[in-house]
Amino acid sequence: MNSSDRILAQRYAKAYDALATSNLQAQARAEELAAASQALAGAQAFMTDPNVSVPAKTGFLREALVSAPAAQAFLNTLVQAKRYNLLGQIVREVNALLDARLGIIRAEISSAVPLTDALKAHAESVLSARYGGKVAAVYHTDPALIGGVKILCRGELIDASLKRQFEKMQEELTK
Image (cartoon, rainbow, N blue to C red; front, side):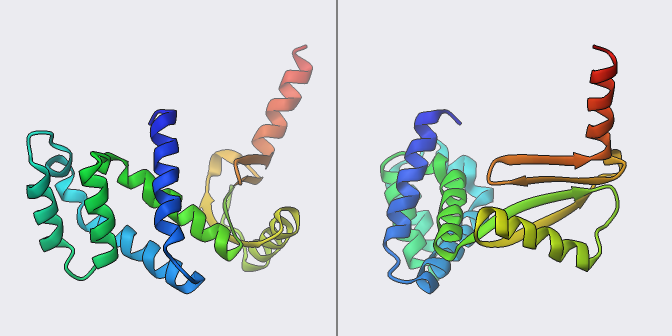
């Protein structure tokens, strides 16, 4: 995705998010948009086909999203502006805005072996203190790390794995 599409997706997401008057409503709207996006995943080719008319696309949305009026109205706007292709990025941006509203910090934590609940709690506590918010972490096991952890949080990579330490040692020894 190019930078202008990314900026447009952020603008559409902000507009969608701004319609919510409370955090609870913002969460419900984000969930509705994500569910609509998933429900329409099989219709991507139809919805982005330039040979299909806008009325045909909006009619399809009206039938497919009867139980999601807010998402339907928003998607109609995207179709009319010929920006439906941005839907996936918009959903991600809406979720990021919701996280910001709720003070949630997303993190991905990889370790060589599965972490115990105590180690997970400790990692989340350290990240919470570092970034100032409630951490929602996703855990992965990667035996290639040998030991230690690798954390991706707010675009920052913290690599405290044995694999990285060995790589650094090798760089030092080959200088």
